[in-house]
Image (cartoon, one colour):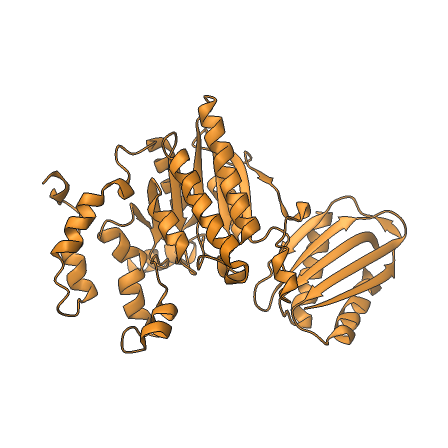
Length: 97
Length: 291
């Protein structure tokens, strides 16, 4: 298991937290919570070691569109980049509905 | 019903199996009455899995909800089969046991509270070894304490099924509800094959496995109380029915004489066929118990 952390700039307050997904094979769990300040913090625990660059690419892309000040915790059981992207978008949708 | 009508009802069915543990638990309550206790944001996760390089889940794969079913207070505990095979660890076991103990305390204070346990589990989480075994022992004690006051209903929807120590816990339930897709058994097919060889039990032979462990066989042979379709409203109906029915006059696990007698009568000199076995143990219309 590898632990990875990233920070991204944020502009907007987020009001609701969201929980989506499950730590099942090829899937992941995301806990998204409002945070103070102008930063989004992402903390990842993944069962597959050695994919830091891929995580960075997926999150860089996600944060080109998303500007909420949040703490995101990801518990990953080997999700593909596509699944990660979809789960992130789902978490945002749940927190903003 | 015409074939077309039947096909449409199948397609329009709201699958219960496709729901995750949290959605399953929510679906059983009277609408708008449920709230989750110790949810994922409380982060009661397994401390043992990360030490072994395994990603934990924020709720340890165990969802606890309180609310009303058929207008009565009820607690629902659902295991998430997709996380570590729904296995019982120290934390998930303690969540389940504490939920049943609180329900028991409420009953003793004069607030009738039933329990529904959604089992999708291979049993003890091997990574947590003795702590998982202890958790199941405690859970069994809690079921026995609670079932005197209020029904404890076990629901196996599938597709993981319910195996190992948790099948013993299920055996203590007031009522067992299963779908055809669900399985219930002490040793899982893979375990039997691994220990005794493929000649003993071919775990890839799905028809054989379901003919032995499947919900239909368990229901017809009297080891489950209700057989339901994979249909959310139908399953919620069955749960409401058993909550309203209350504590049974005699629990299945108290009928030791009946089952001992049945097992003694089995001729084990030859190989039993699941169909023959079904005919032998079929309980519908039988008055064996009175004998």
